[in-house]
Image (cartoon, rainbow, N blue to C red; front, side, top):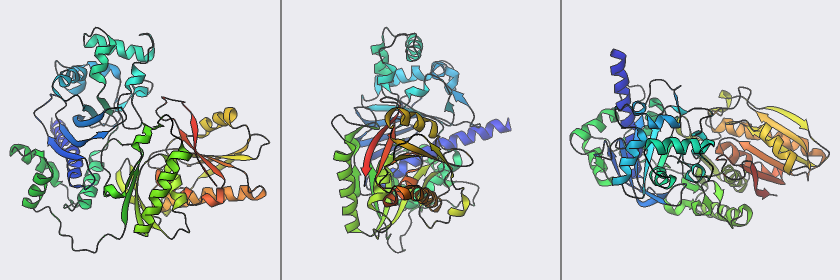
Length: 505
């Protein structure tokens, strides 16, 4: 019984922290968030946290989102798994009569047409479940085009459609599409501690008091509940500032101004609108050039994207010689940014890196170098050509996929250099900025040695790694040039393999 009470407390705190994670965006100068509500009056089951945007924000679909309704499920154990069938079972969301899909159907009747409905949970989608390939790796929205792909009900996607259609007692797929088009599934979300760290990070960034990590309690948990009791749970910027002032949470800024100019490059939008600190004039938005992670028809990396990135960064250099980079962008753009802000550019940089433990500022002198392993590097002879390929496996394994791509697309590659972490791939393989810089330098030095016999050999770069590491690797581009960077089809909705992006001499 005691354990059940603790679990319920933690679940309440988790919901409160998701609320504050979004609420502090109200105080950011570049945010589109205009209202955040804790335990709203509806729609039922998607009322835990409601976020409203003005202007509406772009996500992976063609329509912009004006409001986002959250159903939040925290679990004691992180090993839980779920699949598409669970969305038809009431007990999956702790209900007796109505399933998640039934609640979604009801919500669609009352919410705005531009609304999105987010199921956020600490559990993960089952490996091999037909639901897994239907969730976008870009922003976790349901890939409606893939679900309604024209296949029969016997296919994997057809099984999902038939199950959901029958459960909702619908006549056809058109009716089902209208219901699920706004669904978003954010699985494996942050732990309670990671949310606490993220809220403290955001609070400091917007001038609000952070909670001491040494204390057992976290003030913002109880404050969210008290706001609900006082009927003040729907916050806009003005009411949030007033509450923070009344509660003594505003921080007097007596220290010296920040010497780093925050700049942001966004080629896609992540699961939460939580970029901290870049003003609109210091933000390069490339989202109109992409559909999810894919270039819009008629766009080219080299002709359309590269000039925009290089021009934006060179303009930023003129403003300030110390830059804080926020890269919600493709890996190729991170590499290109490093090539522009190279080691001899005279620009001091730090990067905002997102990950499983929230948002961190990574620098080349953050003392993380001694905490992490170095790459295990292996070479494989493939043929008699001149070109060289590099497969960098940090967050995901890459070597087998790269090898298959080379066999069909790049017959002139004579050597494959594989760089892998000795502990295997993982989301926390890189400890920080100094560690990332050391790994980038290790790769650069190895390539430089391999190229001694043929300085003009083309280097093909395939990487699954944090953007910060790609940025630091780009700073060494002169040691590897000429080089070509590749993007992988993580959503597996287009070519399902690699595609070249930038060619850098």
